[in-house]
Length: 417
Image: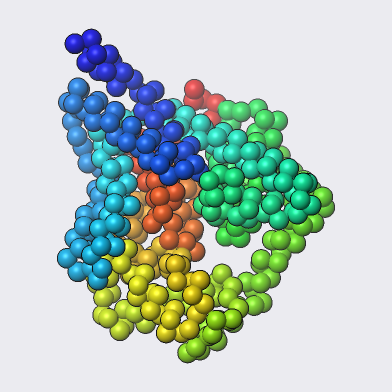
């Protein structure tokens, strides 16, 4: 009896769910099983809260859309070209079902508690950035090899996390610290220095470009924060002056994409050979070309091939054009093509509706952080199948549902606790 009463008291605390959701986000750069455990704990406590307090269950539009994608994935078992792979795919996509249900069952968080979750996550990203930088510097000094300060090798101490996925987390945290006015300027400047330097060293071209464009747009509309322009100028200048390898690394990656991608050749050539030089954009262009050939040949634009079942068709294209076998594990590297290839037009429309709903709701709430978050994920989905990986899927669904609350005038200022 006492145990039941204690559990009932525990699940009544809103702070408990702040901690649980924070842990879901903070553990994303760590091992997948650690993140999965935090999700399961979240679901157990939300279910307990619902059973004890019998709160009215209300499905909002965002939850319905995420769950609809999962239901469509289940239905794709009726037409999938590979049943075993699709069943395994459903297991990997459980977050599309579990997280929305958890948010429906849990007590609604107020704006202040939503911001606490984001604050805890953002500070955790500063810690992870410092951790990777310290290890990268130590190894570079020991081996006299500066490559440990860039791209995937820089992020590798965090369970071999892809630098692009980590860049998304860092970019979002940068947005938070820029928009927040609760911290002192010198503290904010330090935190932003760490995150911006780390983001540049991670060398994700699309995330760096998007982040600085978004920052610039915000500063143009908010002249009170012109002090931050000086911080950015000093940071970028310092990196280029003190760390020429950093600027060379980024410049080389940009120059490679601009001058070594032979777009016309990729679109017209019938055979490439094992040694053909592929840039990131060039390979993605080939994958897009392959998608349109695949749906034209198999007439699956309406349904797709079934959840996670498009890979064998893409591998067939790699073989047909005689690409290096190391590419056989590469998916479309484009979330929009990925969902079209596997769940057809309806799955694509569900995804577009989610983004549309997020942008509309962020404007309605006057929530610049939510708006920036939506565009950040919208852009990264152009170059990555971001929502088909746990670290992208959980990050997007959790933060989207966290932001999606029936409230207005959501802002970051000193007026909030």
